[in-house]
Length: 328
Image (cartoon, rainbow, N blue to C red):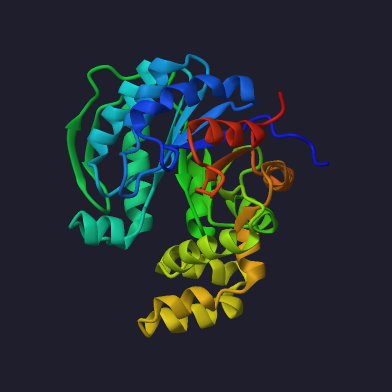
């Protein structure tokens, strides 16, 4: 068995669990081997609210956003939210930033998804300076900031900032100017290439890892195909997997998707690609597969638990969460 990871995270909110009902789960996590709680932001909850609740419910878990899009809030508002959550959970908050996607930014929020690298770099620089207590004033490539200063900045104890990255240019930016990176939609065998591209040994590498903890292989693969065909047809993820070497394997999916045949696109994804990107099996088996990411260089594995037929009630969900837990 591979060496255990020192950190072990879970993505919230849990699918199918109302946000107010997370308190029992959150309070149980430290005894189940979890050190971290990471939020997501797509079309459900925002990234900050679940962590604000968790900060009040449990005093030891580290809390991270994965991610806050750099387009949908201004840099000043991102800095304010980060400072507030850092004050609510001193020393336990990590700000994860990322470009997000044209669908979330453009289609859902009506904001132009222009020059994601420059926008990510500029927001990272402004937020880092603001959290350090500096007054930010000047022209950046993607916007202009005039005399912004946080009223209550963390100052000497700002939260770490991680930058979501998929390909070499953004990974190098994360390694050079952030405190680490956040990876998404990759296999354990892909980790080393991403870490090498950062060119920053020793920095944090968090990874959201999709886990479907069920022995029903057909169910897991069907759900995995639906998710993969939805996400990996996004241009940034398509380019990411081309870079990782899956271009040929995923080409039939892209062709069917471009033709408007969503069912055929999902069906065209090979089993081995699904099995690499969506871990499945009994919870204990899934846990071993997550440890392979840690052995490959992920310092903070973050489980994104997908719904399964076994999750019939809160007690069953908690049992599965417990069986996926880290060393304790």
